[in-house]
Image 1: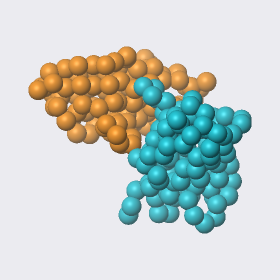
Image 2: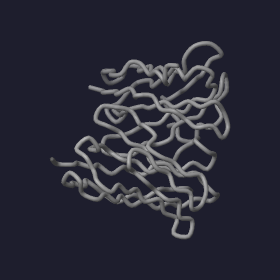
Image 3: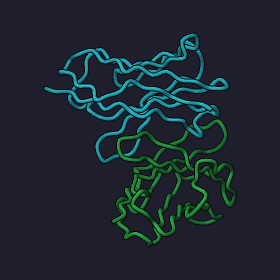
Image 4: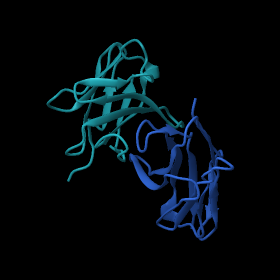
Length: 112
Length: 113
């Protein structure tokens, strides 16, 4: 079945550092890919998405590019802030936006 | 337009009791999904419902768990005879339909004591 693998956390960075969180997937079809963020005590918020190969999703300084050849969707941000501290989930959906398969999440802590 | 509303936000039950979790989808959304998040883990799909129909319950435990989405009112996830292992955060998501983006609620955190 479909699956999503993320780099294990926790990841601890200093403010203004460069962030990469790796995500790879396996899927039987041609899925849509998503990054969700979960702040402490809150639900999931969609951060960005991509629906086809070579699409780049971006939001709030975060970016991820749908790489079909490497089955990857790595999350990057050039300069993290303390407010970016959260858990980040990579996810796929064979039918756009539905029946998500989530990765285990990567906890990010940004220190001032 | 209010987002997906889940209640209660926090629920404490003793072992053997029943837990009822409610999810009101966004206005106009007729598709509802339930996910479970165990501590320090990702979300696992449980069930996908449309109004009055269960479309996919492949992630739902075979015993003690049930879900419904009636014609009127919220979707309900029911857990009978709860055990400590049921302690988790339960998230609901809703969408307009096939190939439409799903939006998540803030979750219900169930604690079984």
